[in-house]
Length: 183
Image (cartoon, rainbow, N blue to C red; front, side, top):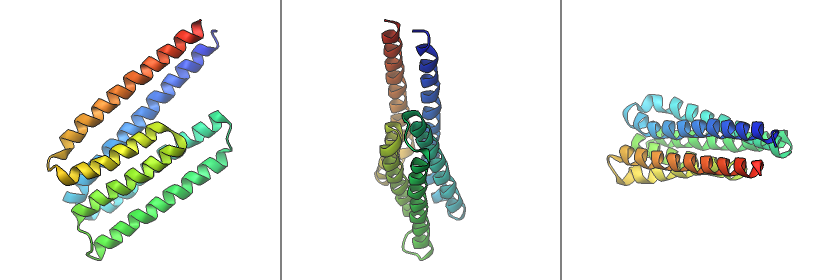
């Protein structure tokens, strides 16, 4: 029975680290809309950096999951790499549309949120439902931002609420697992 406790603590620490990484990713994605609106020239670098953060987070979680479950790590990371390179190409395409005058920067920020939300959601489908949830929140934030002028506060309240619910749910599930392991 005592051997299970370190594993539960490891699970709690892993979940906490994933939660922090995913919350930071969501916050940075929301910040990206403002950067695209107010500093269009710097926004391309920001979105490429944002995509790299999401890609590294996804690949790290995917590698960890593949290692833990016993799947081929190289295949999991390779799939992630292809997924995020394709996303990078799509983000580059959006900025080509801006450069050609087909999209303005405000619209580009919203489209980028939709693309990154979809990419993150699909990545989460393969690696971790938490990542899918962050992708869904990024996607929905793009839709909400199009309709609500002062959307950031609404999204922030919703995001914090969801984060608290997830934290409490995982804490409850962890306590339940610990209780079962003691029996």
